[in-house]
Length: 140
Image (cartoon, rainbow, N blue to C red):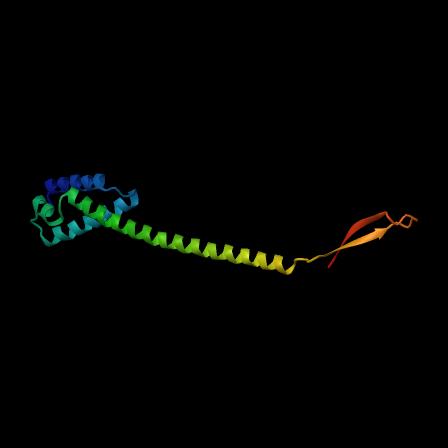
């Protein structure tokens, strides 16, 4: 590989790195993969020029766009599958809350006390029987 080709490739990799919108670790993995692919291509074609590489692999903009669209599709797929997980969790929580409420209602129903209300008239022991009072007695 000539010194000129080496310098052009360094600039090429830097441009790709600047154009990629992913995180640092992902950028490094992408650049390493591109370097490896280009290295294999150069080994198979020792007289290759930078123009040949650019035609074969695409411009830095094309490469970044390709990885961006692939990365975007993967992120959307993950978000959709995450949305399904959230919906499932919400449904599960709703079922648990509903079961708890039903249990509370059943427990309250079983432990309810029914009172029979009776009014008892009490007459005074005085000679005047016109005096009476009413007392409410509750019994089960």
